[in-house]
Amino acid sequence: MEHYDVIIVGGGPAGSTLAWALRNNGKQVLLIDKADFPRDKTCAGWVTPAVIDSLGIDLEDYRQSRVLQPITEFRIGMMGQPPVDNDHGDEPVSYGIRRCEFDTYLLDRVTADKQMKTAVKSIVREEGNWIINDRWQAPLLVGAGGHFCPVARELGDGPGKHETVVAAKEVEFEMTPEQEKVCAARGEQPELWFCKDLKGYAWVFRKGNFLNIGLGREDNHKLTEHLEAFVNEMKAQGRIPSDLPSRFKGHAYLLYAHAERPLVDDGILLIGDAAGLAYTQSGEGIRPAIESALMAAETIRRAPDMSAQSLQRYGDAIADRFGRRAMPDNGGWQLPGWVKTSVASGLMRSHWFTRKVVTEKWFLHQDVPVFKAAV
Image (cartoon, rainbow, N blue to C red; front, side, top):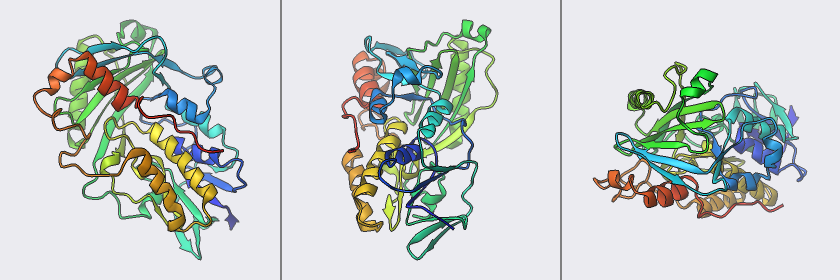
């Protein structure tokens, strides 16, 4: 049996950031993931300057061999009506990335032990340790494996009855020269198109010669229908090529305000999508994943033991950062009640509303200070 201080299940941004943040603290860390990296990940694929800052990423180094698309504009609209184009100035307000590259970059920075292409087949609690696959043990087990993380199941029986599970489908592909010529979408201007019922939104995002198209909704039984209608409309408008790949990949995640999963217990805690931390207004999960990992690292460094009481510092930090969870009656994307009325279509035609509220507040969270963990 191999012994570690911390076992992290999931090598995405949350798990790799936690392992990276613990690099100089004398902790023996093992990171496990069922996939082999690079791997595809369903995601529109952009990160804000706050994420870059929190992770200490050198942009010049990153862009040497990876896609890094500066974003200075947004096109916001409601399906079926003309969009609004907003220019945010010369400085990028976000950066387009390919998740297969970004996640691998973060994972490659990790110096801890890694076990890739390794599924978690068994989790056993024994004498204060967690035993994984009858091979590795540690007093602390961290779930960072997304919505279906096996560690999350140890803290409950699955999604609660009030949890809003958002389902999304997307495709990302490298365009041929012919497709590039007919694609009207511009890299510096991602497009966000809200469903008329405000239960989800679609996107068109060009990153160099790569194109990402997708749609996410809280009622997944209508997901394919809405996606097909959106794609057909974008094709008819000439925004995207007519010959797209036929297979869209799926993904599911929890919105923060509606997730019921506990975050900690004796010797166990959840970070990132495993904890259900995606922003309620936008569904964006990379920044919450990164910040939750940095908060978890601080807690682990300071904790006198791995009891639930000691680890509760992490739960308190999450609540302080993202607010107390609540399940509003209107559910879904937690849009204010006055938005979910006939005025919504008018608001989506407003430059002020689409820029100051939709983009800068809901999607970019520019009003939230950068989170940096103590060293």
